Amino acid sequence: MGSLKIVLSAMVLVAFTQGCTTNLKPIQDFANLSVESAQYTTLVDEYLEFPKRQKRYQPPSRHANLDAMAQDRATQKTSLLLRQSIIETYMKSLGRLAADEVVDNTEELAQLSAALESQTPTIPKEAEAFKKIAGIVTTVAVKRWRQDQLQNLIEQANTPIQQVLESLHRIVSDGFGGDLQTEEAAIQNYYMTLIMESQDPAGKAALAEWKDLRMSQVHERSEAVQIYGKVLDQISDGHQRLFDQRQNLTK
Image (cartoon, rainbow, N blue to C red; front, top):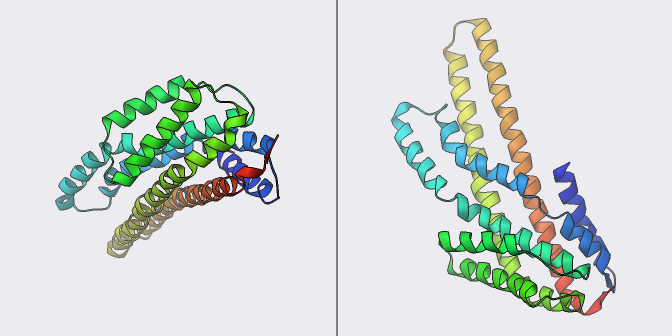
């Protein structure tokens, strides 16, 4: 259900921005149903667990390297979740302004501030985008912006939010997706070797069932990664459409 909501909300934004004027109600709907953190958090957890899963299929001689990888990835968790938090906080502000409501994002800003202080992005351009979005949503709250500032919000936020979306998409496709390709190959090699070495027909059948189970789990995760990547594309495209048509916003 969560994935369906995300896809539909992104489609709504793309659909209503195709006209000459942009009605604000669909912006509210889009913001309220934008990317749900639960789905992304699951993908992050699976990324962190990848080294542990790989130890099932790799020889003991490689376990030390996998343990080191696990430790390194554990330190990335805050940074990985930060990108999602920035998008969610911004989209909440966008939706509130479209509804002409005062934005109260005190809790989100406190969490963002703590996350920004605790991690150091490796890409300066991305770090600047983080700070810009945090600054924009802070201004929205402190100055109590309302609907008449929606165009200003979209105008200021488009460049940095596109940078954050691009960064997150790259992580999802290359990092999460790359892991799944590696895991699929490891499962195939591991179980096919055991099946070929086994002399027991019943044992061969059991191993084949285990292989199919593990492969189905990988395929499910792969589908989730692909869906999430497409949604990020849709959000990026939708926000760009809002930016391009920001002069045509109507109530």
